[in-house]
Length: 256
Length: 257
Image (cartoon, rainbow over all chains, first blue to last red; front, side, top):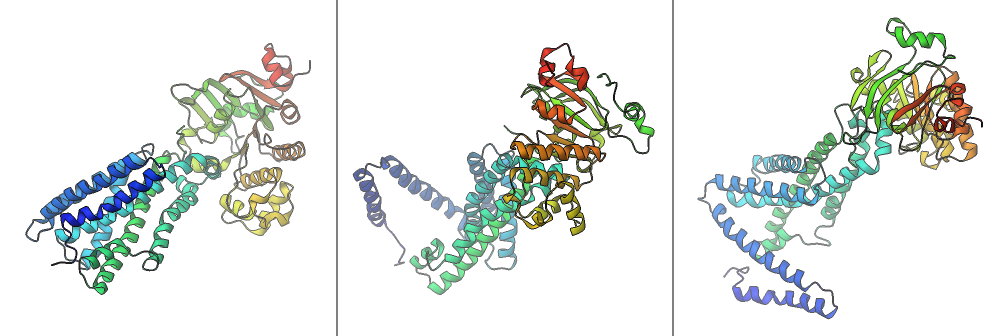
């Protein structure tokens, strides 16, 4: 038997841990019981559905077009989520869709181009999921920061414009800061990996019975993938947003 | 179009009509029926104005009357909703905004301070800045040369404003726009910035200077335009405005009782 073959009984047993959390919430009157239950149930249902759907695309004899279709849906949904979390940023849906797609092309292009992984549903879907999943919060963060900075630091930006700088030159220092802010946490957590945290992919592989040395190699490629994808997505996103903030005559658009 | 003040220098008055043919045209703005501000609630409503003179033109008016809105049109930080503005005989819309803004420089109420030293701030305006030029401009604005490598965020309010004027002068402007440059300063600093403004004007760079301080207006300006509710309430030499029919105009220029 595979070591990671958790039955229904196993699932039920692990849900005791939710009961523990519920107990703490009740005991300390946190008022989080409802949220906890909803979250636990949603995770269960969502993952069961995803598991079922994944079976449709990752079998070796499934045509690759199913996987590609999956990617499209995933990217659109990611763009939609980004839009929901940063609604006031202009053109955020279209821009983030572009950013996620660009990042997928670059990162998956490298991984599959150099045949790090074989090109099949089993690899393309989870890897693309990692790209989007990890880029999402950084993309929302960089969008919000850029947009807020354009409002809060209007005097500084217009000070540069008034000296005859182009919009992109006037905005460059702020763009740089926002990109750094989005990337630094990713770099820090990459540094801490293995010492403070054992990454999920590796834990999953080891639990599923894979040799830890193999699991580590997969994990490293995944981490590099995450770094590359966050960098690509945020770069595309921030360049796109900074174009939206100015008119063609190098004027900072007023949005208040 | 506004009436020309009688005391306006002759070349400038001619300039308003014939600058196209002049080799060194006086820097003249001409606004015709300019509306500006949010499209659903314009702040400026049909401004006709000629800025024909050397020296300092004061822009006075109650807050919300559109003084800053007007000034920001002149270096194209904003564009008007309708109407035309020309500078040196050419429609502002035809100027490359970056080139225009180096010729028509602007200083703000709160001097924007860029990261780094005073020198770093100067380099934003003039990337090829050398020590000689930096010292020259510091001398010009009355700042000690040793401030050049001081972090700019450690300057006092008055020093920061003088630095921002120096920074603007490094682009070699033909006109300087000043949006209440002394409003955030204490009395002593206010006087040094005013003196600097007068000196810049004397050196041949005319200024358009927004102020709500009537003492300052009378100390600096030969001419003033008074805006009320987005319209030109009066325009002319201070002595003309002192005897203007509208009591609001007389108050806004601090006319003697």
